[in-house]
Image (cartoon, rainbow, N blue to C red; front, side):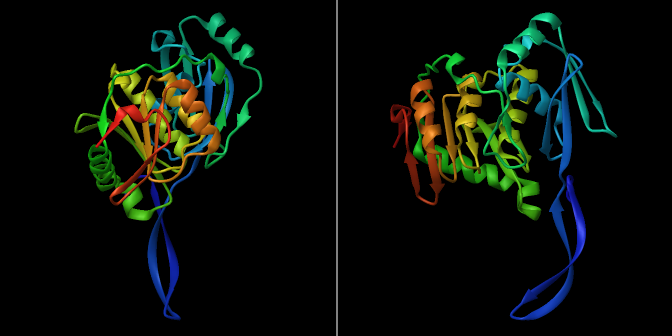
Length: 260
């Protein structure tokens, strides 16, 4: 059985004939994220890379401005709580109060965002990516997506530098895949501004904002962006590419970074 999946007895009907079989489905867990002892949010997520998920969420939402504010993180395996401590507790908690209301996003599995898009600086990047590279690396990402290929029902994302996938994640929530990549790269000291992000999921405004906060200049998806994602990406300097399928891609913003 594939990790992060469960098996169930099912009855499949093909051409009207029932057949008993065993199917794999992705696991889903409620993950409570705490910052300096304060519970911030409960995310529905695949139960893997949980420290990366928590750290990435805090960074991509601007609750930790840089990794230098991060101190430690621990996981309670039974309760699925991730507790993150910061070095300057009072400053971080004050920032949390300033963030105000949580936005419930369009994301799978109760996505949440703290907004604040106006506070994100514009991404300035000379990165250039060919259409062929985007298509080729999307195929490579899908080949490596074990959970996605085994049982479906999950999204996958990957950060690519050159011709190498340097970080990859799979999750029932498309927002979570980006947070896991941001967390993993940040904890490993990887500069995300030199790469481009691939994802299977719809590109929404908060996903663009997560990329912009991490200085990722290009996000490409196998499906569509939303109208607000396009408007925010145009303002924040993020290149949005959609419908990476077969021999076709569609570029929506900052097309100067995409070459033939």
